[in-house]
Image (cartoon, rainbow, N blue to C red; front, top):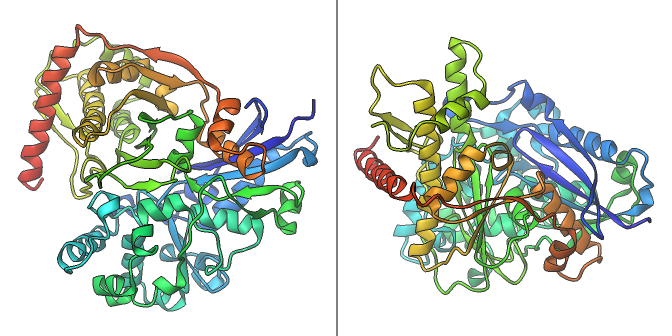
Length: 528
């Protein structure tokens, strides 16, 4: 049967993935992944200074490759919709035509003219300036719907940093765009920064956008943070769109490049984890944890009667239109394990499976080692990118499996702190859904999550939930379903694993968790 098809595009940290989905039942018919070539070579990045930049050509070249990859042997007329998710906040300076400056010859190798990846932390000082002014200027605290603390990972902090350090970009930039807005704009041929469709998800969670103050904060507030932001507001946006809305149809150029028709509807973009929560079939008061190099925790609620402090925003329609989307997360999760493996590699080849097996055999609480998971700062609760990871209690008898186990415990305790924070703010957590590579590859970590959270853990059956969520939004934008909830019901893949708490381990983990909190408080207050 020639069921209608949609394409889900998922622009991750290292690569872009496309999936071709039967929009009637969610069957994934084809999948294609392409690593960003320049990023793979380590160009434009400096980990020592927390600089992580990506060239726009990496996105465009990889996009073309993966869509062609999933369309082999498929009639192009069957594809009716495309959804797009990206990392974020990942902004870039553009000219009046919406062309990223890095695509101009004079900026082709300038990192400040490229997309500033979500995990770039070069803007810590600028985030501090935004927070200080928001609390001291005597008016509305425009960070109130973003947890009350603006992060160096977010839109205006990154923009201000580049404006401060690069005269050339400052002179050439007309406006700034998020990655998740630019890709749909390119595909539909509307890259005019003043008319480009802007994501409700990106604007609400990272750019201080809210209906209560007419969109973005007023000119006097932005200029008050720093004169370099003066005049920018009028060159950005006022209106935003939720992911179920179509921003247009494929432009002729891109229809030809991708082997599709110009009838394909393109949905408004959003951040990967928000669409990933939809791909994991989120419902009210479910907590969906997308576990990869970092984590992004997504929760939806019919209504929230107050501003929740210390999270990464609460935005009406950022996940499911008509519901409040709440975001939290950890700046490092899998990255902590990857760091440890790199460390051990100097002593020879180490297999993660062997390390996990040995670590799982160690009884919890049998060592006095303690670790903090803040290797890339802390995102939630209460963002602080100045914090660093820490390990104490080592001795000459400490083994690699012991240390690995403690590092895993620290990341799981960091995840528990987020759950406790939501509960303390009277936001119930009814179910926990895990997705992402770690959820499918590590029963050891998933079981520990169940034990520490004291909650059952469901693992999404689809290993590409972000892309699947994008495909669902593409289906709604194409008119195949009236609501996102209907697309989830028909296209969802369900769950293929569930972990239940081992109550015998609960008292031990509770003691270790309290010690984790104490250790963190001591180091944070001590300025480490």
